[in-house]
View (cartoon, rainbow, N blue to C red):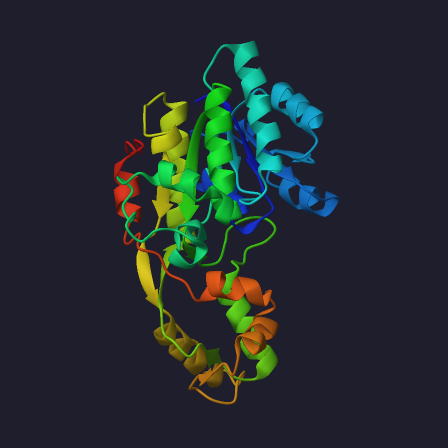
Length: 321
């Protein structure tokens, strides 16, 4: 493996953990091959201690992106910085297209989406619930009703038009401490924990649901399998057939919040080991610190894509140890 890899959002929870996973578990990928894109000087300083190439890069500045992709001879981009703004993905794809033209070799774009694009309450039809269904065609049909879907479609179509090979990784609720050099916390569970600390008690929603989840280490393994496959020139599903759903198991929310309340009460952090019901969505949104219009999608939704993780891993040849 001699091709170089750019990871955007490398100071984030997912992007940083991908960087750490490559460095700690996969010695065939050298430090010289890894280029990390971050937003601030502080983030750049933190990641520079890893001995990798670090760029403070504005992803919306297409000329700067093209220059850096060319200068570092990037063959693979893992885009973990944003799932809803195609304006941050398109310059990266355009830069890869120019790199392909200059080097005459395949270029790959691995885009990070989100499972909320496949929730019924975001407009996804319940009849499409397997990765063998018409996932891309359905995303395109319902793209305008949800920004994550719209971005997925734009990424796939633009990449293919430019001769770049795209993949879409679709994380479910990601949990577990990250391993990156900057942010090591996920969004959902720390958000609920902070809300409980602020309120002095654990709350739950009035209706129990089952969310789909994946541990951060399983998610980074999925990214690595895709990276390894393309750097080893192995053909795996891509483009309109290249959605990879990171759904490892279900998570019963009431059961989780029961455990959270018991654990926090045992540490003297809340007043009761039994959760109470949020009195209103507005109260919950204020406590968790999310806009109320996002509460349903982020905390009260599930998908029909069940136990998809092993199916997705089975699509990809296993890397030799």
